Length: 348
Image (cartoon, rainbow, N blue to C red; front, side, top):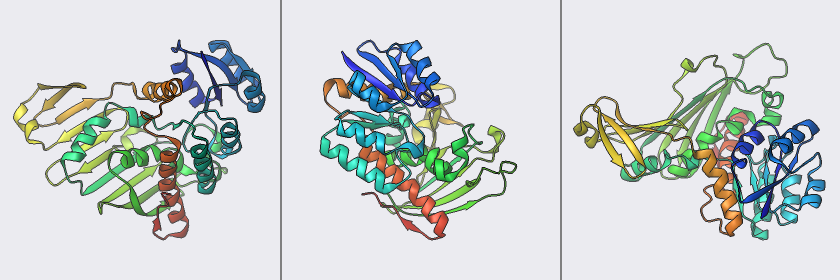
């Protein structure tokens, strides 16, 4: 039985642990965190051993795969040592805060022939296939995206130097999903604003930003994000893919609404349309509504584990090399904010 290890026993590590506890075909062998109590709590729940040094863990248990769930500024040495030892790895986003470092990790993993994955679980949602179908069947002219929320409760998030800011640390999920279902960006221009969140002297990231994107296809997008909100009513956070005669609204890990299709209008109020991946309700006024099934994160983790067990990484939807491109997309936005100039996205 292959051994699984986890580095980083905080909130996102706990998210993955809940999935691991259902696994019967791998051994949960080791958990590592700089805070001993956190690693010990994980080991107490799952079995295995607790460590504060990942190198010591690697020597002691010799894992066959590792999940790296660490803060953005901690990336680099851990991944490079993991690659040196030939261990397939899953790394949480953002994969780094420096493109040169991420590129070095990407190239080293490729040279070693390792199976890799990243934490873009939204790609595994059952909302993705209908979104892809809509985009394939319609010429998308304009994409509009908003993600508005509050400030996460971890100290490192408050400073752009340690989190990357909201675009890089949070809204990267939206940037990544747009890349996955639609296509690659060419150029970005981003403006940010501060001064709406006050009272914390350590907080120094943007409260709100707006990005204009030109895609390689020629289509345009506006992507807005903010951490100023105190209630969900502050904004309707979604991604809209707009065609000439219809649109699709994608609410990440929640629902999809498709409006303007002729079949929706013909279906009638409260009728049902049954598709291969679930039952969709079609309403003449509301359009076609599709609910998320809550399985995306489970599928994301399981796909990586199955890839390591089988030696076939072809079903992984976001390997490290692709996650690098989503990082590049968001880092270009930060560069544009800092320079107040358009920036071409470095995808390679």
